[in-house]
Amino acid sequence: MKLNATTDDILSADNHLIQSFCDLDALKQNTARTVINRAEGAFVYDSDGNELIDGIAGLWCVNVGHGRQELIDAVTQQLGQLDYYSTFYNFTHPSAAHLAQKIADLAPASLNHVYFANSGSAANDSAIRILHHYNERRGKPDKKRVLSRHGAYHGSTYLAMAMTTPAFSQTWSSASDLVHHLRSPHHWREGGGMTEAEFLDALMEDLEQSIAHLGADNIAAFIAEPIMGAGGVIVAPKGYHVRSAEICRANDIKYISDEVVTAFGRLGHFFASQEMFGVEPDIITSAKGLTSGYQPLSATIISDEIYEVISAPGEKFLHGFTYSGHPAASAVALANIEVMEREKLPEQVRTTGKQFESTLRDLGELDIVGEVRGSHFMMGIELVKDKATKVSFDDDVEIGGKVAEAAQKRGLIARPLGNSLILSPTLVMQPDLIEKTGDILRESITAVAKTVG
Ligand code: PLP
Image 1 (cartoon, protein in one colour):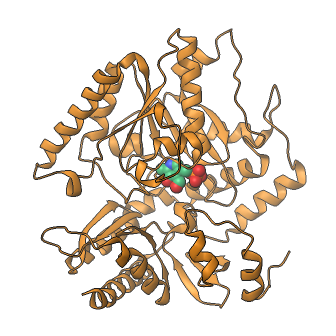
Image 2 (cartoon, rainbow, N blue to C red):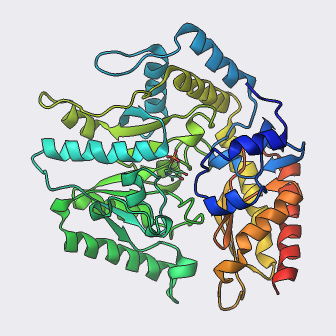
Image 3 (cartoon, rainbow, N blue to C red):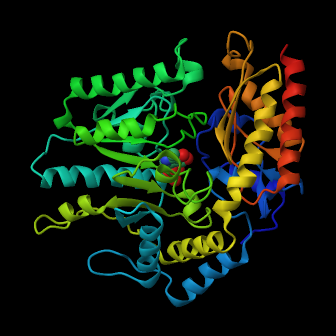
């Protein structure tokens, strides 16, 4: 292990690493990469020793905060007892079994069966594969297409990227024939002068017309994040999820709630679909906060009804990943949930997350802040050139990147996404740090605003 290598050593080695969602050419040309090599609580430390508030919890995932000894011990103890065994065929092991039971307890009442994989993308792919198999078994082999939304992010495997908004794939191809994208539910940008209630009606009309056009017999699923994350933290109009679920149910279309970001406390609940949005989905997918990112693990949680069909006598369940339910990942997820329950972290977030939300909402008064949106510890700030007309900065201004850079210089990591900034910190942020985060953002936005005129 080279935990104490110099920054130069690391950057030289890094020339062999292909980063994700990045400009490879720019990375090749410059050395302005941030090396994170240590983390503790709500902070990370770069290789020059700078302390940074982790305003994005790694990548929306380190919910219980960094460096929790209990989680580290869970991994080492598990590896000491059983390093690896698969959950293929008739094999199982204690950690995966207990974790599945625990998730079934926490999830909405009818969701009692859990399929493990290693990423949110694989959880979403698994949901679709399972539904295709389910429909084959029900004698409905054509029922395969998926309704997703413009603005959605569901992952980066071939199928998950097809379900993601086309804006993310650009020149990359995907399995797009399977997917139909509905209108984005972003009222502020897409509402076109309608009230929120009128916009909601228009969105439901789009859903119904799309179903009529494609044919309900050809559609397996509707997939939606309770709050869109990587699309810029978009909160749909009130009632959107309930009405979408009703339309899906009436058309025998399964409702998949992608809770890869929203589950495990970020919005103040273990799962947000039912508690916050009043929907009991047919499938919930989850990852990230499930292990707080300490190990890669995802869960596809399916209803009793789907499970009964796929487990009836007949064709086998032909789906599996070597690391499904990996012992170390399952053990750390159990320890992570234990910490969350003992510390009542989701309940705490209902207070601290609300403080975070209102601190960020105050930034709405700044000249170049067009919209502050989101909920609890999942927030987005859209920066605009002209507040009154909502006209955006040109892409080459890279406004989000500039503010993120200014924030990092002041000790905060925020994530730029086009013209927006994303904030999704660890859930252990307390009021003083929340205030400091707000101050850094205010200073950074104000400073950058002066330079872009
Ligand atoms: N779904 C949502 C809502 C996500 O935000 C992400 C990742 O950010 C994914 C799925 C994909 O997860 P992963 O990167 O673990 O494949």
